[in-house]
Length: 466
Length: 127
Image 1 (spheres, rainbow over the protein chains, first blue to last red):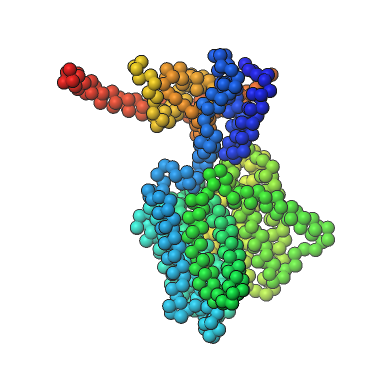
Image 2: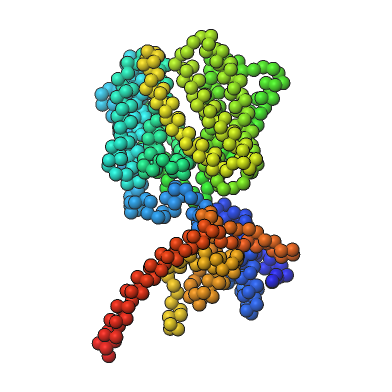
C-alpha cells in the first residue's frame, strides 16, 4: 500500500498538506482524510504504471482546486444564513442586482438616513452647529437628538434590510409600529431638563429598535433559535465594523482639519455640523451592507476577538477576586460602581454570546469552554459582592431612576449568567449538549427587549419624568 | 451508447444524485472516501465525473444531518483512515430519496415513450 520511499514525493505531499491547512475552513482532520485519499490514488495510479510524479500530479488534479474545496467546506461548516448570503447561493438574496447596483442602493439608504438626521435643522434644531448651539436653545436641541437619534437613523437600516430580504409591505408596516409608538412616546413625555429618566429612555430605546431591526434582518423569521443566533452574529460584526469605520472617520476628519488649518481655511463648522453627524448616521447602513457583502468566507472577526479577550478577562477577574481575598477590601459602593459592574456584566455576556455564536454546536468541550466557565463564575462572584454593597446603599438612600435601572439591568444579566454557568458546567461534565446553552441565550434575547421597554415606557411616569 | 462515452454527465445532475448515490453505497456496507469514489466509478461505468475532493464536504454534511457516522480506524503500521457507516436516519433518507428519484425517472420514462414513437417518423422523413 505505502507507495513511496522517495523523499521527493513525500516533500510534495507535505507541501500540499500545509497549503491545505492554511485554509481555516478545512480542518485538520479533513486534511488527514484528503491525504489518505491522495495517497490511495497515487498508489493505484502507480500500480497502473504511472511514474510517481505523474501519479502525484494526476491525483492532485482529480482532488480539485483548493479554493473550491475550501469554499465547499466553508459552505458546509456554516449552517449559518449569512455565509450563504455571501457565497451568493440559494436565492436568499432575492434581488438579481449586480454588486454595483447593490452598492448604489445602499448608498441611497445611507444618504436617506443622513438627510433624515439633518432634517430637523430645517426647523432650527441643530445642536451640531457651534454657531447656533450658543444661542441659548442648545440644551433643548441636544435633548431632542438625545431622544430621537435612533428613531431617525434606524428606519433606514430597516428599510435597507427589508429591501435585501424582499420583505412584504404588510410586514414592513408591522415593523413601523414600534417606531411610531416610540416616537410619539418620547416626544410627548414631559421630561424634565437635566433629569435622569430622559437619558435612561434615550439609552434603552435603541436596544428595542435594534431588535426590531433584527426582525427585518431575519426577514421576519425571528422565532427560531438558529436565526436569532445569526442576528447575534450580525450584531457583533456590525459593531466591530462600525468601530473600525468610526475610528477611520475620526482620523480622516482630524487630518482634514489639520490640512485645511495649514492653508488657513476653517472647515471646523462644516465638519462638525455636516461631515461627522451625516457620516455617523450613514455608516449605520453602510456598515450593515459591509457586514453582509464583505464578510470573509472563511472566518469572521467577533469570535477571533472573543477568543483573545475571554482568557484576558477571566484572568483579570480572577486576579480581582484574589486581590479581595488577600487584602480583605470589598467593593466600595461608590456612586458609579453600579454602572461599572453593569458594564462588566454586559461585556461578559457579550463575550459568552459571541463565542457561542462562533462555535460548532456539536463539538466536544474544549479548554476555551473551561476558561469561559471561569470567566462567568468569577464575574458572578464579583457581581454578587457588588450587588450586596449596592443594595445596602439603596436601602439607605432610596430608589432613584438611575439606581433602579442599573439594578434591574444587573439582575437581568445576572440571571442570564447564573443559568449560563450552570449549563456550561453541565456541558463540561458531559451532562448537557452545547446547543442547550445556545438555546438559552437565544431565548433570553426577548428579556432584554422587555426590560428596555420597561425603562423607556414605565420609568418616566413612575419617577415623575425626573 | 458507446459513441456517447466521452460526453460526461452534467455537473448539476452529478451534484443532485450525489447524496442518494453515496447513501446507497454506504448501505452496502461501511466504506471510506476513496473506496466510495471507486464504487461510484464502477456503478456509473466511469461516466460520472467527480471532482474527488468534493466528496468530503458532502460526507461531512451527511454526518451533520445524522445520516452517516464517521470513525477513524488506524491499523497498526498503516495510516489512519476515516470510515463511514449509514445510520437508521440515513436509511430513511435513502428510501425517501429513492422514492423521489423513482418518480422523476418514471416521469422521464413516460415522456420518452412518446419520444420513441415520434422518432421513427422523424427518421423516415429524413430518409
